[in-house]
Image 1: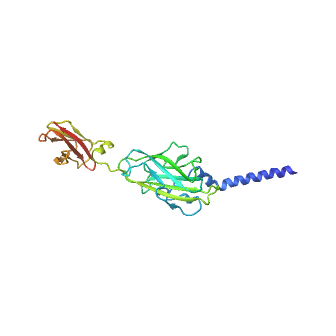
Image 2: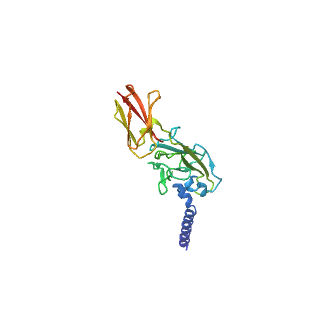
Image 3: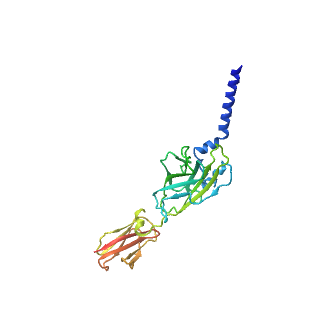
Length: 275
């Protein structure tokens, strides 16, 4: 008569365990990484981890997201290192999610990682979060990943982040949520440096030259002009550019080195040697 009681006890315990797993399923899912769109970002409707984790409202803290991007801004099509750090004295479990977007929720640049403690989420891999192996820490946790900046003239980018300091009780209650942002601008490139990363649409030849140079426009952009200066910046010659090739008489210039700036909104600078 005792054996059925034993079997019933085991069955009840198994049902209770399954029920615990079911009702705390969101907690287990968050332990393996946050769902996309919960980092306070405009694309996600400004939702944070408080949508699933009960407790006080999310607290904003600046500079939880940092990078090696120079103060003057990012260079287009360049890879940078981004770090997300959260601190909670006495805590050992942490979580996060970050996404790079513009002010209206367009995803900007490309997030990537090879770390086993990180994973990309969302239909376009536009969010990054922890894995189940990436939550442990001693009073703090830092996650580092890579971000490749977008194409030229994209403008300002904001990294949106949400962070959890967990009480590690295997439930969604009692956790503390923080948010943070990092705003970065696109570097302003002018003159010679701009030629390093834009497709050249204007060419100047021959170089060196004797009597004249030809400035060729390789697109159909209207309203282009040129200016030729000496090394002190003094303007010597200027004029409008034709849609194909403009010949410029430099026979009156002394032998030496000059600068030819040509373009419209985009200015390209060329060194011209007069023989």
